Length: 261
Image 1 (cartoon, one colour):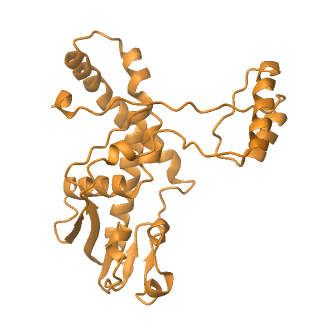
Image 2 (image 1 turned 90 degrees about the horizontal axis):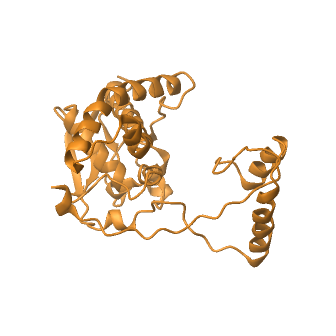
Image 3 (image 1 turned 135 degrees about the horizontal axis):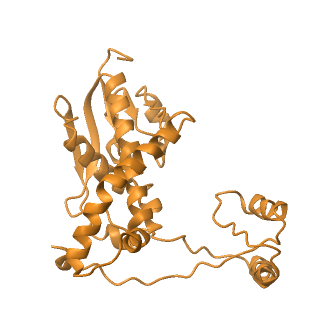
């Protein structure tokens, strides 16, 4: 144990709103968002430094993800063909769900490691989290899971399932704040947000869009998570003119849970 004093693990910023928790250990720095830092500092808080994203552990996490994916994918394909009365090939189904399922497995594995590391190295007597009884983990599109996984409500419901499944709550007291939000899956961002841009940028992006027709090679660099200027510089280094691609807004049909009973 890292410390013999009793500490409370906080998974949701909602639990810290009244600042009544002493010696809290926060699952990550994002818990601090919108909180009164001065008041929280008086409570002797600590932010857990996860090793999940260390150079040593990242390759391992992807290896475990791939192994787990290969274990479940055949059964998942059989069930989906049966459910939809189809006979799609394994390749076809992997194109449909492969990226999403791999990403979900990787997220679950990383969140499991966080919880396990904290409960192993700290003397945690209470776990504070948020729960929504009407919650669903799906996203409207494949890329939506990246945004879902950074949402506090989505994460807390996942932590709740992990804690229960692995019986982490056996000797810990779960303090659950109910979240009554029922339209979370409707309001969650499932693609890149559409921000208003200036007229000057519109003109600049129009020029880049035109230059797409004169690319020197077949490289495609988009959503690299670099600053836009560095992404453009990276494209130039690879011998192509800077490119810009517009995101199309997709209107999804409303989720019908009766079809999935």
